[in-house]
Length: 110
Length: 134
Length: 103
Image (cartoon, rainbow over all chains, first blue to last red; front, side):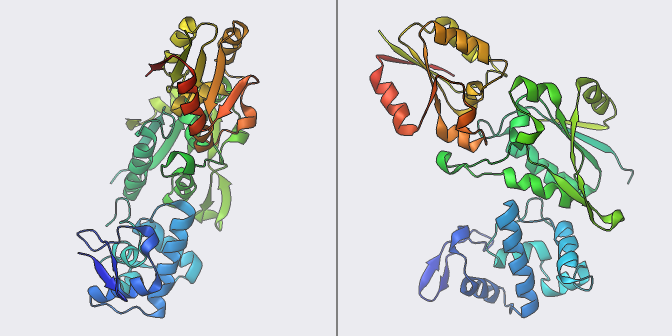
């Protein structure tokens, strides 16, 4: 089902992931979250922005274990744990955060 | 779960066939199981690790930056066959200098790349619990 | 009769280039592309066979886009092998009477 944002339509796959990486914008992220009845706070954005930077550099979405470790290194131990990340993204940090970041589903994701 | 040694033997050049990309994906997926993982690059497999790959001209995704993420996945034992480089007019300087951060040593950056001869490769294969060929 | 021979397999993995060189005659051109570009680099185990063929009047070309994709710089290509782009590939095909693809 296509996603409508400000009168523009974006193609998504059957699970709601953006079909084209380049379609992403912060507004699109908000709309993707809204479709899941989620609201994006500063804490969510930290993770989303981190994922986009990671993808830019390595061309992959990191596995959740890698994400957790890297977030801990970058944003501090209190955020680099799965409890914190699952609270932010209850559908699974890698899976849900990647969706809002406009990335493909992580390789071997949980 | 007892840790096993997984050895991936990579023998194909990137882009001309799908083996190289498939191998990398299996390595990344397999990394979730936290086993002892070793990658060997031999024959045309050594081309996978060259620096400066630019694929815009052939319209395929450049997956060479993903090798730099292997350290994050605790895949940090990468072995390159010396003779294969030599036969192809290449040296280690032509390859990406892959590293990892050692969690047990205050995140010190360490080298993942090792140049090996055939005897050492025989040993790596002999010591493997699971061998995967691409 | 001039023939353009195209080789898209690595000379270190398949014998496509070897066989091609035994057949390629004077006035023909050998174009290396895809994994075949590996053969165009200097100082490889394929270099001497290519030099020998050059000595017999065979011309050589390599596709630049495939070199770039593999991180192989065009200044490492053997002397006497010209680097062409896709348009150059098409031009070579048009300039020869036949195209033989060593797949």
